[in-house]
Length: 472
Image (cartoon, rainbow, N blue to C red):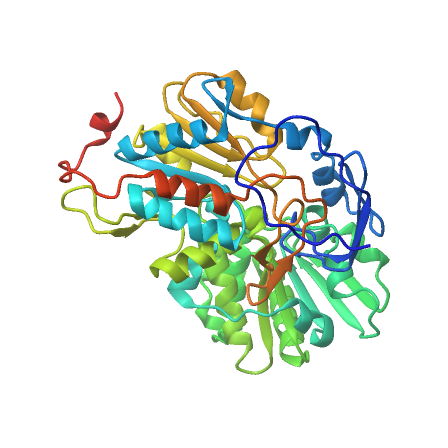
């Protein structure tokens, strides 16, 4: 029996607990990983718990453990006390309308949630940043600088005979990666892990040859040499200290051999994880990888596959870019509420959540966490007001924070509501069906309710405040 998605209620349940009937949803799409596996069968039990029937994916099992009978009994709260939903929304709207520089953080939601949050942000001049903003911004910066050749999961499965994994073991973060791309196919493939040991899951694959090269090499040095090789520069293009050093000479030989294999392959895919790349200069590594992919396409076919976009990061970034023309870490305002500023301002460094909190540059935080619950940053000042549109599991943490905290429980797309998410390869939007359907409102519904409570007109803009004026 298939449980159809229902139109989420905008009011909270009251009275006796609702006991849902047991049901099984087949071909269910899992929302807890950007692979968006859509071949699953999930059971919604009479006690409101969930169990997946045809996979042992640890990431999915951990997420499902966060859902139970208590979810639909979760109430909205203000300053640590349960209140009616309308009172919580009114209080939250009052906080946002009086804020001079609010931040919308977390942003773990789907396409519809992102659209509604953008409208709300425009009404109060908010900054938008995702929980995975560092990884997302690194990939975006590299794309802006040099562009990229990207590929899809389907292309990997049907065409790729050479897969190069740079500094990552995909199954650690995305347990079903190989199931979605390689398992069950007859194509002979070579899997080369550069700068790391082989993924243990790769050793169990049929028709594959797995190897590791330069596992202990510095990633920046490796890509600098590799970029030079892929550009087909003459041997004298290398600095003497590199050309003469034995270790560097060996690295050159290994990478030259790898580039020759790329040229001979039918279709090469470069796989990397922006979140796993080291340091604050991940964008430089991604840019170098994009450059190697581009150069490889001069003689063969190659594409890149960035594994990321978790918790709706890719979906929110895509949505904000459609609506504003700019990616995340953008301040939006309609009308502009700060004198001398543009309605849109994008800055991947200035509008980083951790920096904004550390420098005291925001005076309100709207934290959105509709998937398996991430709490807000520990560095959040005690006197900073926060509004949480969150998974019911965050209710107790919000209540414990007490004064200055508004909590509104929301549905998880794919669990208690339908929705849409972008898959990891960024070209496919997957529809989500509710596996359970507890009467929780969506992020989109709550954001629209908040926007409706905001003032329709604003006073004349204040002079642009300094960081010291925003917070003492």
